[in-house]
Amino acid sequence: MPDERLVVFTTPLEPELVERLRYSHPDYTFEYPEGLIAAPRYPGHHRLPEAQGEQLDHWRALLSRAEVMFDFGPSALQAELAHLPKLRWIQATSAGVGQFVRRVGLDRTPEVVVTTARGVHGRALAEFAVLAMIYFNRGLPEILTDQRLHRWARRSGQLVVGQEVVIVGLGSIGREVATLARALGAHTIGVVRSLDGRTAAPSGVDRLIEVGELESALPGADFLVLAMPHTDETQGLISEATLSLLPSSAVLVNLARGTVVDEDALTAALQAGRIRGAALDVFREEPLPPGSPLWDLGNVLVTPHSMSTVAGENQLLAQLFSENLERYRHGAQLLNVLRKDRLY
Image (cartoon, rainbow, N blue to C red):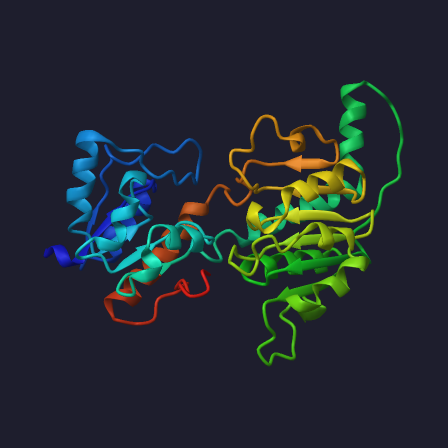
């Protein structure tokens, strides 16, 4: 089999999924270098290899022959990705890879297509958003404190029915959040970069607005859910001024990237009780530093950028990769091609 059809896996995938891909796509040669791939710490963990010395030499030799890569390979070789001689396509295991692609120079390499995992994590993150709605509506922060103190204190909660959920970004994640929030009886407002002539809102969205209208929607928001990509336009979009427009009963849910929020302004608003709370899966610096006040605020739910990962994720990734391999073989349009000019 000529090297021009070589597919190299660089992050973990279960052996049965790799074998299924081999069986379904006999025109390709698949390399799964078990001794070089970093072992996953949990199901669905796609950890880039931290190779050095002889291992790094093995990776460099292998990737020099690769036409297709599953994920982005060793961290130490990131600067070389844009210069690999035969590379034509990388299938990412994450949806939000735009900034990474820019950082390693792949945005300036038109001959290398990058496809994302858009759609794979939508349901998992949407369920986290719903968890956050119920967590704060039913007073779970106070209930958990009472439990630790062995204190029996009955409380009243709220329902999601009739509440207003503002969702910034209507990709696969944002649309799934809208669908689940609507199913709970919420009124949903979807915020997009541009309407582009659209008049009808996607399924699950009651009202569709452009990002320039975001400020008008904030005073009535019970929940502000961030599901947009990290681009130059969204960097710091949720600023101190933006946060000040939210009612004190509002909760911010960040499923996007930590850099879309002014974290210092958010921390100050939470400390002062200017908003009710926040559920944060992403942060400006990751891991979140031990000294961050966000760890200890009772009105903050901190999760370690892992709410997108659930059992069965790799099956969805393998299905997406398989479909794209078939399309690639026939020269057809691939699914989830990253727009390098927009970084999503």
